[in-house]
Length: 445
Image (tube, rainbow, N blue to C red; front, side, top):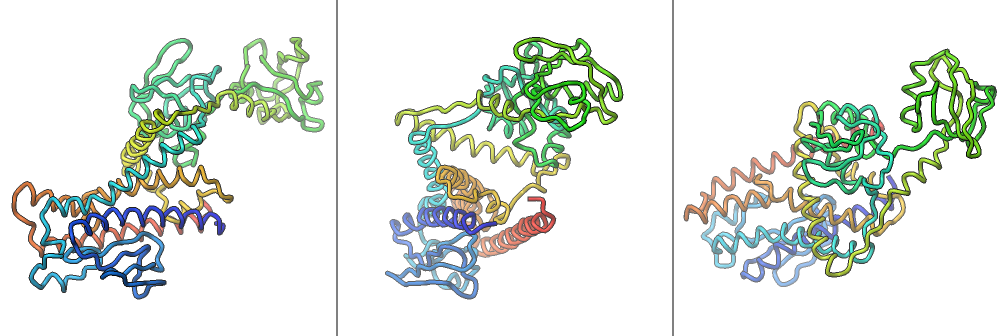
């Protein structure tokens, strides 16, 4: 972890927390509700800075994991109930109409959603979007063992995920982990198969969520092991292997399985050298190898061929920003499918602040920073809407109940629910931090 990574994380969180809390603060002020505190970060026992202005204490806490506004007459995470023992005052949250309280509570997540929309629209307009187009994988994909267990095969061309067109490799690698079915072009035919959860579990276990498939690339010799079988047989740098014993072997993912069947045997390689097809006899080692390294620059060039940079006009960028926001929200909801699945055990991959900081680039990359901030803004909106007491969603549920039934939830119920919610959230935080620390100690980040 570097100071630059930490700086980017704290800056992003600071922007999100301030704007989220402003989402509560502004409607509270508009409805003439007293706001006692507005804090960036939490301040148990003491704060780093505080200033009182027009009845509100503004401050910065020392615990950089969020922030809060303390609204008079509201049961919140501070569990300060002394004020609630007195008769309700006109400036208190509890004395306001239910619709006003609902707007105040929904303000934070609303700001988070529109902030993400604004950032994504701006990124699409000013930077465009760079991605790898699945349609440009002319030779199909090369798949890891875990990816094959999911149901993919070498040479597949990805068409649809859960009946929706799959255009981009970057989103396809993630969406497939949450999908029920995937449609591919396989040997000239469209094939739809169910995603095997055991394969998803292997992908997650091997930390290859972005690596389990990629473009196929040819077998081109880069370097030869000194005195190795390939060198002794006369193979040269730049030779391209296209067959073994008369069987077509054009791609690197085909080579190892074929050689594993031919250990300690002499084989005839079909190679392309200087635009001519030649045959070379070479012995396969007991490990199923020939003794050369593949030219990875060829693989990189194949990957670059699939890259697309799409530009957007202002009129296109605004709806595109909304689509990106909704896509991120949808993906985050789908993640619960693997997080709480006993097969995939996705909960082991959940990262807290330490894990998130480790994902930040070690040099400042503003495009990544704003993309991360937008994604995290959507994530905060989603988390806060979960109907757990202690989160905005919990308050919203109680307020909606009051609006539907015409009866307010008893104050004691609110206090007890808030206490249970705070205990639950604290336990969850301990679990996430513990998971982070364990992964840090064991080097699994």
